[in-house]
Amino acid sequence: MEQVNILVIGAGAVGLSIAHALAAEFEDVVVAEQEESFGRHTSSRNSEVIHSGIYYPQGSRKTELCVRGNNMLYAYCAQHDIPHRRCGKLVVATDAAELPALRELHDNGVRNGVAGLELLDSEACKQRVPQVCAVAGLWAPSTGILDTHTYMKRLADQAEQRGAFIVYDMRAQSIERDGDGWVVRFANGEVFCANVLVNAGGLFCGEVARMAGLDLEQRGLAIHWCKGEYYKTTKLDNIPHLIYPLPDPSGTFLGIHLTINLAGEVRFGPNAWYIDDIDYRFEERWLDEFHSAVNRYLVVDRDDLMPDDVGIRPKLQGPGDGFRDFHIALDAPRLVNLMGIESPGLTASPAIAQEALEMVRGIM
Image (cartoon, rainbow, N blue to C red; front, side, top):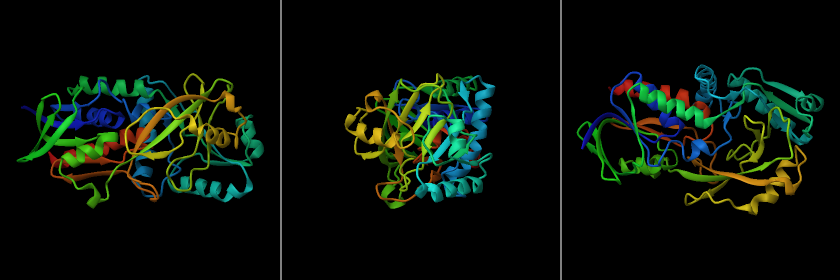
């Protein structure tokens, strides 16, 4: 049995951010990741967007941590030479019936403290993106994109420089209380005894929490896996900004949007449906839905859409549920438990790390 001070389970963007923050103040921080390298699931299978914070209810943790994380993430990227671009986002209304929802989205963003928001008419939208079809738009200049792999690599390297250890191929098999600490047994036979346990398990946070003895149904913390696919095209170029439709009214996802990567390549997605098993196979049965959704705001031929990537989110919001916030809490003695860290978790990751750090400070 190996004694450690703080054990973080999960080496996605959030787990690495937490380890990076903790290692600056505490000795003997260990990150245990079940995969062969960091960020193999939600953190690397997303739109790579730095969100502004316009979508979430005022006063929610998603809002607070996204808006704060936005500034922190841009600063970290600039300081550590992480490729990124503050490209801005255009949220479009494609017919007059959507105008009230567009104005409400603008007002919600203003209430949330998002700077620089501007309502645009059709002509102003075309000036920003000549190819777009819209009767009006909402310009969000603080939205951007980043290289998520480089971001996580920097966090991992700097956490280790600060004295943290990151170990891979470590799938937790059982977790139990031992006095004031936690004993975690892994499938490879390793056993760690930790003074503090941090559950940053991402897609698998529910499994970790259950092993730690939490009744997730009783607490309303059951995790629902939500799958989404992306299509790409090589027939569009010189798109300077991200283009989003108005979000899905159910709040399940933000709609099939257009994103660009740092090379200027265009892709669309994700869609969203709930699944029972982790499965990254691409299902082309949604192609017509993608084509129809995209062509509401930009013309692209069906044959020019090609399968790209698949991602899965760990949602607290189940089918038919309303908005669910991030859950970040001390749910048991010396257990910092992070549940439902989906979008905007990547943007919020530096701010989430600070919140986790404050919790650990209160324990130690």
